[in-house]
Each structure stands twice: as C-alpha cells, then as structure tokens.
Image (cartoon, rainbow, N blue to C red; front, side, top):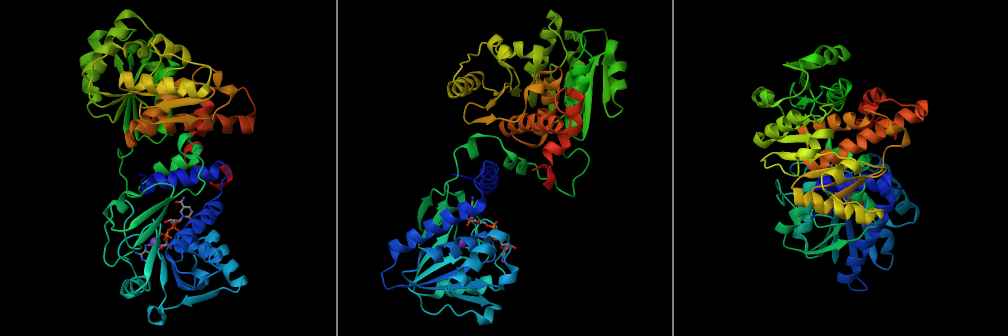
Length: 480
Ligand SMILES: NC(=O)C1=CN([C@@H]2O[C@H](COP(=O)(O)OP(=O)(O)OC[C@H]3O[C@@H](n4cnc5c(N)ncnc54)[C@H](O)[C@@H]3O)[C@@H](O)[C@H]2O)[C@H](O)CC1
Ligand SMILES: [K+]
C-alpha cells in the first residue's frame, strides 16, 4: 500500500536514479492497454476519455498500444492546455500517427458515442475537490454508458488516499493502478490490477531528492511551526553544540537553544547571535542540571543530546537521567549514545552513531552492505529506536523500513560534520516522523558536503556545511 505523498517521493527518486517519468508513463500506458485487451472483444470499440494531466497521458500511450481496436481518444480541453510536457509529447505522437483524436472544448460538445470499452483517464492522483467541467459531465456520461469501464490509476474523482469522492466520480469495473495499491482503492468496488511500471527498488530504498518533497513549507506558517530545537551539549568542547544548533536553524527550525555549562556559554553565544544560550552552573553537564533541562525541554519539538558533552561519569548519568524522564523526540549523538542500550524511556529516540559508536553500543557490523543493513535493522528493532549509522553509505532504519543514503564524500571525515548532522536531523524531526527525519538529515548533510566540494574542492570544514544546508534541502533548478 502506498500513499500519494510516498508515491510522489518514489516517482521523483526514480527520476533521480535515471528512470525518467516519461519512461514510467510508457509502462503505465502499456499496462492499461493490456487490461483493455483482457476485457475487450477483438472487434470492440474503445473510447479513451482523457484529462490534461499525466493520468490522461497514460491513456495517450495506451491508445498507441491498442491499434488493433476501433479507438477514439477524447481530450477534455484544448491540446495547448495539456499540463505536462510528457503528456503533451504523447498527445502529439497520437496525432502524428493518425489516431482518431477529439478535443472537447466545452462540456456540451462531449459525445461519448456508444463504445464497448471506456478508459477513464480523466484524473488520477492529481485530483483536488469535486470534478469541475467538462470533467464532471464526462464522468456522468461514462457512468450512464453501457460500456465496460477501465480506470487508469484510480476511478476519476476518487481520492487515492481516502477513497472519498467530493461529488461525481467514475464508477469503474476495473482499475489499473501503478507500482503499488493505493489506500483509497480499498473502498472501490472494482477489480484492481497493480502494474509494475519499472520503478527500481532503489527508488524506495535509497534516499534521494524525491524525499525532499516531504518538506513542504506552508506559506501561512507562523514562527514556531517549523520547530524549536534544544541542543544539550558542550563542556570539554565548545564548537560541537554550536554547530548542531546552527545546523538546526539552517535545516529550517525556527528557534535553536543550547543548554551548556556556563564555562563555555559565552564562547557558544559568541559563535552566533542566532542561538539562545542557557548557561548551566559549572564546567561539565551534571545530574544537578536535570531539573532545569527538563523544564527547558517542555516547549521543544526535539532535543539533541550529546554534541561535545564528553563522557565524564556525572555527565553520562545526567544524560541518562534526562532521557529516561523525557517523553518526546530526541536525537542522541556522540558520548550520549553510550547510555541508550540500558535506557528505559517513553521518548522517541533517533540515534546517530558511526560504526565505532554502534559497536560500543553493542551493535554488530559486516563488510557486505546488505548484511550490514540487515544488522542495523535488527539492532534498531531490539533497541526500539531509529538508527542512523554513519558511513560512506549511511544506513537508516527503525527496524521496519531500512533506507540507504549515498550523498557525502571523503572530505566529510573532518571534525564537526557529525554535529551538523545531529542538528539538522533534530530540525527534520520537528516536522517529520523519526525515520524520514533521519533519512533526510543524512541526505541533506551529505548533499551539503557534495555542494561544497563541487565548488571549492576538498578541504571543507563543518561550518561550510552550515552555509550549503539550505541549498541541499531546498534546491533550485540549477542544483539538480
Ligand atoms: N509514478 C507514477 O505514479 C506515475 C503516474 N503517472 C500517472 O500520473 C497521474 C498523476 O498525474 P498528475 O498530472 O499529477 O495528475 P492528474 O492527471 O490526476 O490531474 C492533474 C490535472 O487535473 C486538474 N484537476 C485537479 N483537480 C481537478 C478537478 N477537481 N476537476 C478538474 N480538473 C482537476 C489539475 O489542474 C491538473 O491539470 C497518476 O494518477 C498516474 O495515472 C504517470 O504515468 C507516471 C508514473
Ligand atoms: K482515472
């Protein structure tokens, strides 16, 4: 089962992996034609009723595959208004091939005739709200006809996620859907065929730019809607918590706080006026700080625990004690990872170890990448956390789904890049579930590093990543 958001992610990831959408459309159209052949007599007439989006485009392709039938293609609207280039190209190919095409300029001009089979390609996953005209009239005529109806992807007017129809919807006997079942089809009384359209398995397994579609930014948003992140870190180190908190801001969080020992608070603040610094008495995190940390954490969407904390006994005790009483999402990094295996907590944890830290936590590793991914998945399930295991290929798993991230480069072995990753993952966790947050945190960090190396060559430092994180997460056309 796949939601429309997830489908859009997978579709864009396939494109990023070298399988363009037009190629998928060719497979979709072929699959539709094959179901039409299953239901149509050899001398049948087939009417394809097409909208101006890619759902219609699938049917333009299908028409090319159905030359043995008496085929008519009805386009709802003028050809100039076809919404996508790939659908437009497939329309032009139909006209060039001399196939019977008709443009329906208004609903009164729609004449379905009396076909044996209707292909409903008015709208697919792009539908919003009730069918407008001429789509609504076309749907009513399809429902009134005696024909066998084959719907492309979903019956037009039906929401692919919910199965609800906001007004008229096509009643189909057969549905050809693509790649995976859509939840809305559970509520539709039709035979459903799921067609493999050649989306590579890697489009689901590998984190790619399609995953960025998860980060829509509502134009009516208010301050705080994109999250407040608290970084608990520092003591022996000053840069790490500052890098994490700045990364959270660069990855879209609205406010970033750093709770750190007072001995370094001035330095942390000095790195950036964008941070809100809370000084804790002394020079190391200690159990006496836990009540104040718990108080600070109340208003936060995510807490990042670990950057630059060190592993003094009292520090680890404080980290464990804070996390055991915490009930929301925390990213755990660096020395704080050690406390996770013995921890009992209601919190949702995203842990970001490298190989060495993973092994120190009790996790196993292997040289074969698939085996390594399986071990990470099993360990995530055992701990009940989301693991982001850093490496040349990052592995992200919540024990149910495992993703691989391939962005990043050898320049990123420099100090501080892990602190940036923890912070950007914290920002992602404010707006996304833990597993996609970790996946996108890893993707963005590596992509930021790749952008730096592309323009400057090696010799990157962690602060360079802060500057390129926004471009990694919200690329413009030139970054693709
Ligand atoms: N990987 C894949 O999933 C593939 C899917 N394919 C097919 O593409 C459609 C989705 O295409 P898209 O262009 O995004 O949307 P639609 O064709 O469904 O419609 C967009 C079109 O419709 C207009 N519109 C929206 N709501 C209404 C309404 N209520 N009334 C009238 N018109 C409406 C909107 O303005 C747009 O212009 C998917 O279902 C598959 O069939 C591809 O084959 C590639 C692989
Ligand atoms: K449809």
